[in-house]
Amino acid sequence: MSRTTSPSTQKPYSLVRVCRVWHLKRSTIYWQRRSQAGPASASRRPGPHGPCGDAELTQHIKTILAESPFHGEGYRKVWARLRYAGIRTSKRRVLRLMRENQLLAPHRRGTSPGPKAHNGTITTTEVNKMWGTDMSTTFTAADGQVAIFFAVDHCSLECVGIHAAKPATRFEALEPLRQGVRKYFGGFGPQAAQGLALRHDHGSQYMSHDFQEELAFLGITSSPAFVRAPEGNGCAERFVRILKENLLWVRDFATVEELRQALLLFQHIYNEQWIIQRHGYKTPAQVRQEQLRALPQAA
Image (cartoon, rainbow, N blue to C red):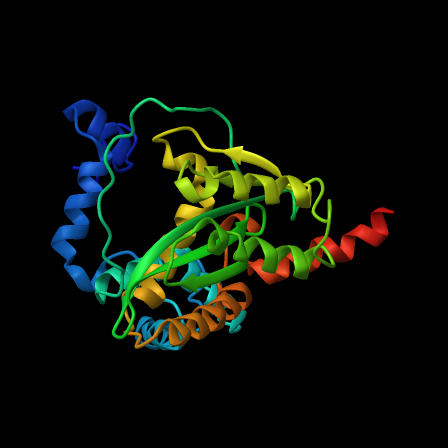
């Protein structure tokens, strides 16, 4: 109809006018034309073609996933690692290719959260302002169940200390803090870590008299999370998941010492290679180094 010539103006009727008279949507007409033309003439998404085709980019994605020391990284981190390798493309394209090639990590669908026990955020804008600590367990062939204690920075999410021991006592729970205080505060002594707060749960190790007394000796402020609210210690809980998915659930250990050495190696790999979206896809070590370099300039 839009190709019919008007007898009065000798011009073809416009598609806009035809659709208005027939009470049709123009989008429907365009869709029908595209369907009749077949898939070969399907319109392509506008924009540049990118550095390579889909097949080549898919191979780059598979290489990134194979070379990464971590399991279950999503399309955003794959996109960031491609940029580090000099391959610039869009996140949506990476997501599409990973979905089409079954490269996305399986995940559980979350349930709708209930009322919050607290408001605000537990992350900080500066390193060494708040650390979070928690424990997990695993099994060894010779020693049976073993406890794993660790501490992470709430700003950079850096693992500042990690330790494994057969007895899960309050003294073993202090070891990651001692490691972090020695490394990041220059020594172990009275009030050495003054200004630092420690987020922990209400486990017997953390609420014990000896643990709290050593915190006071080091100048660390105790900051317990709300009871039955693990999100209050969310930074440590997130590190537990990373540790399990990339080490504890994929390897077997014969002794506590073998596990301890593996944890120290994982700590180094995590701090140097794990990338964090909210910090612009930087590693925990990069975040700390940038903040420490900025301190003399601010002074």
